[in-house]
Amino acid sequence: MWVHSFQRISKSETDAIFPKENIKTHPHLDLGITIGVRIFGPVFGFLLGSFCTSIYVNFPFANPGISADDPQWIGAWWLGVFIVGAALILTSFLMMGFPRNLPPPPAPKSKSNGAVSSKRRHQLPAILPKKQSNKKPSLKDFPAAMKRLLKNEILLYRTASSVLHILPIAGLYTFLPKYLESQFQLSATKANMISGMAGILVMGLGIFASGSFMRSFKPSARFVAKWIAASALAYSVGMVILMWLGCPLNDFVGLDAINPGRPGVQAVQACNATCECRLGEFAPICASDGKTYLSPCVAGCTKVQANGDDYTYMDCQCLGEGVTAKNGFCTLQCDNLKWYIVIFSFFVLIHSTSEVGSMLLTLRCVDPKDKAMALGLISFAIGLFGNVPCPVIYGAVVDSTCLFWEDNCGEPGACRLYDPENFRMMFHGLTAIIMLAAFLVDAVVCYKASSVRFHDDEIPTTETKPISLPLPPSNESAV
Image (tube, rainbow, N blue to C red):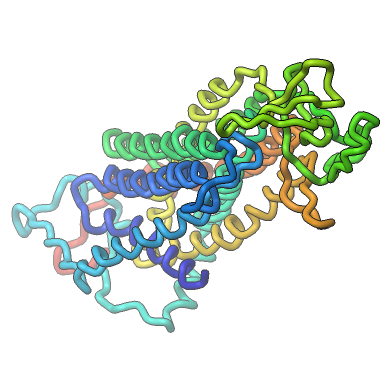
């Protein structure tokens, strides 16, 4: 994990700085393409997860005769590790083909030695770029560089904003497949596919669009900061809307309303008293009367008929005469899934359009020699305060909505059933609150962003109107 973290920080710095320093034609668009292509990794990850969960866990051996839609189905979660590992090994050979040092970009040629471009005529001498030093950075320069970064208020607020943006998004996508499974009764295969296509893929499209916008219109730093804040606020509003868009819980027989998370007294009745049901067993069946039972034993079923992957239970003592049951949940009478996908994708698209501007704002608010250090600081903060607490916080919230914990020899196992209303409210509510905090931090960045020069031919906005001053003689250096 330590090696992976080191590689991740180095890679994020390279992805952001390499296009900016080595591509002079359309660096904003190229940065958008770089970030957008990187987003397709999670898309393929969700699609790969969808494929792996469609295969039973004991692959390549035969499955026990149940379908992927059955709640007892366990996908081959381990298969993706081998596929991704093999792909990383193959691509590592391509990365080894890069030279040790890239050739420096050619120096721009001026039309005449004494001519001064019109862009430089309107620049204040105080903000003329200083001559870059060829001195290589060393470890002893680290304290001074860190001191400069910690004194940069815009960078510190941008770091806090990045953490507050990443924390809810990482938590949301980590548990989104589980949420879709429990809320809309989808299989793990379908839930992973929807998470990848409606979420991550749309995010990549938004990043591409923002890179094209930055190239065409060249907005100012304050405009970009305002858009970042607006996208955070819009995302928070979208999560509030999704809090009220879901499906109810089916009529379950055997749950304890007084002590959630454990099977209740309804699980043991006179009709199934002789069955000696194991209360921690979760093998739901759907009766033809529309009720879902925790297991065939709870329904008092005595006969079963196999038809391929489907099982029909008959002579169930707790059901009415002539009532049969089949494996799985009863069909959910709810049509909100398509609306959830549309609304969720819309707000994901809006928020993703701030990614390129967010990266450029970070790179422009520090001295050029501190770019890599600034990205490393943000990556460290995101990992420590975003990615580390993310599964803990969201995992605790998700577990608090559990209705039925599986019993493994007296020890609590996995949660097999969630309260859809509590899950929906707490899952999206937590995301909305954190993203609202990100909006408040972004509002402070908007106030301070006027001092950032976003483009090479731009002069930062100040409270007083800048005065054009003559350039110093050619034999003197600019102050």
